[in-house]
Length: 328
View 1 (cartoon, rainbow, N blue to C red):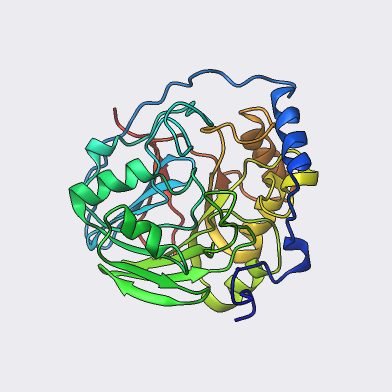
View 2 (cartoon, rainbow, N blue to C red):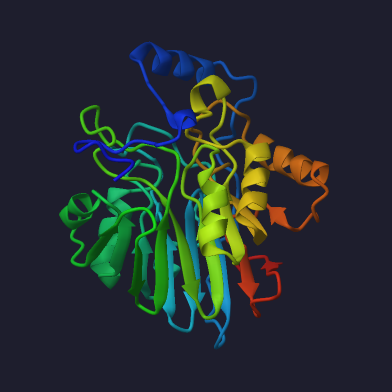
């Protein structure tokens, strides 16, 4: 395995090396506390109650951060579900949610499958996962090494896959894709579990969920192996300061290049404007995304930043999706 040394996983690309010294973390956190623009305490969101989908239709609703709801007539899927107020191991410390979920947990349809990209707290929230397991007992697909954690939350059926591994679950064809990132939930388990993204195929449509990643050659390889991609879900936030974040998080301009590299017909932005993880202002990622799309000569609706609660429906494989506002 080209990204596992027998004890820990690693990024095979030299650009993916992310060595973290305590002084670097302290320097980054100090920069965040002194950043030029404070985040608001709360940004209002009109939550959506997702309606059923028609036969052959794919609907993707943005819940917030990296959480999306996929609906087809085969069932519903969640990516990296986080409904808690903090992205943290405790409820009283850590990054606090600014935008509430675009779909309340109580308003979810029955969830058949959960896709977990990696074990960071802003993607793998224990209380959200325990509640989903209590309600639905969904099946899980995740990269290698995350199964033990999910089973500790009560999950019964967990499929762990290496990069490019593929499984057919609950009417969905899922492939785990490479990402350039890292994993940890404590100071002692760094890179003991793998990280990644997903290519989800269902109802004749193909969606790429990038997870967390720095920019690298793996995006072009994803296109070469898994094209065509109808819809991309690509992170645009948590990129500042670049000296610290570049190996593990793309910035908005790199995100547009990812959209081009993977050949997505349309893309939605994620991983911004919900939890303050880094030092950029809350609305800067979306502004820079719009500018980068225009600078590359792309259609303005080819890569957009939806609000939580908005959804895309894809009616035909050869047609880009249409964005709808979530209904209160």
